[in-house]
Image 1 (cartoon, rainbow, N blue to C red):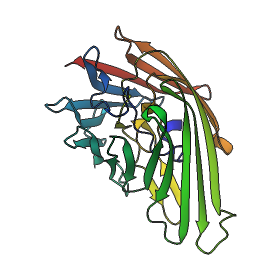
Image 2 (spheres, rainbow, N blue to C red):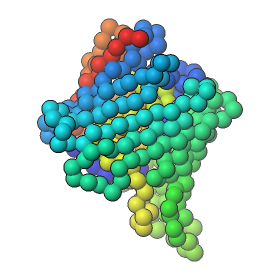
Image 3 (cartoon, helix red, strand yellow):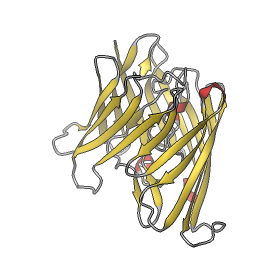
Length: 302
């Protein structure tokens, strides 16, 4: 599937947003009507189906996601994602671990570590197998840009970053740049580089993952840094992580246009069904006109 292919990173660390950017949501869903996400079921064009079951701790925080393939997970892999918080109820670590798999893959887990400013803003996001991201903010405590540095680069100097533009509480444009220079080479002539621009439109309904969230897509290998090529390989997630902007916006994305090099220029359309609380119960994605994914959302009261 298109979203399950290995692609170069499009955007870095776009994982945090909320109605008040200083008090991020810890419960995906809607605070107003006390509904939270219970399961996400992914249906793919190849007839594979994955179920992600959400569990919460005594304080209502997202604590654990168990993901498995139906109808029989005994021969398919099982994934577990666990979350840790500090005394201020800020997400400090998310760890995704692939428990069983056929066939094996060298990287069986990925860990994201978050730090915060004194004002409660996400200061850095450290993906321990990939990159360190640092963020800058504008008015209304909204993140407006980021810089990126990489781990394990050896004899390479790797840099990158980008920015975001908003219309009210939604990101309507985002940019990203990336360059690799061999140490001792000319800084004006990168050995490798790219730039992307994205534009978005939105509905007027509730995005259940508007906040500091990392929601992996099961069946997708963890993101990793490819040495010696110097390429960062970002993998698809449902929401948040290193390469997903959807948690930055209050509403649900309807269209996503990517302008990048070669086949990385894409057009995606998202179609929804909603419940009485204006939360999505179904999201169908079409990329370049072809269906690539259907997500079904189930909620529970709390």
